[in-house]
Length: 49
Image 1: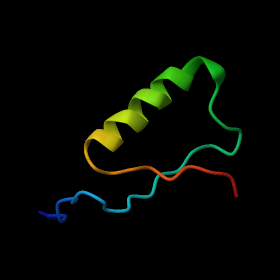
Image 2: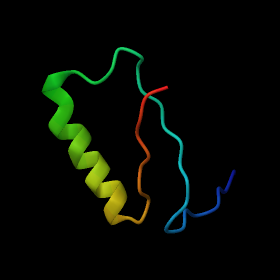
Image 3: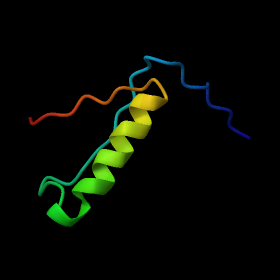
């Protein structure tokens, strides 16, 4: 069984998203996910490449 280390507050966690962006109808879901990550001490860094 693989045991991954626990995430600590301030840890950097990478996520991916489609290059087409986030559809308008899911913006509220994205905002909720971001606020939950911030609450857990894992501030997301979003931007464009």
